Image (cartoon, rainbow, N blue to C red; front, side, top):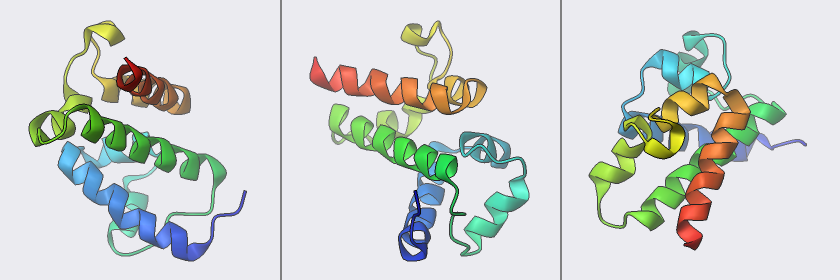
Length: 122
């Protein structure tokens, strides 16, 4: 699936800002996006648009959906909204959701998203 340059260019700063709020290291940011190099993150932060790669754009969509779910679940509580991904969670066997997303790759990101969507439906 092709994602046009304008759309990718608008999503890039959104995700970089989200990573800033989540206080992710460069290595964590690269891993969350499935990238091999932190230099690619630096390029995105310098105004480059996300590459037109299917899995990268899928990860971006899931990460933004995770953020949206957190905002819905914890309205007005920025500390939880932005700290949740780095907090140990019993539902993930004591792991941080970020660790699940990084260690399990795209499947981990999808499972964190599904978990939050399930929480929203309760």
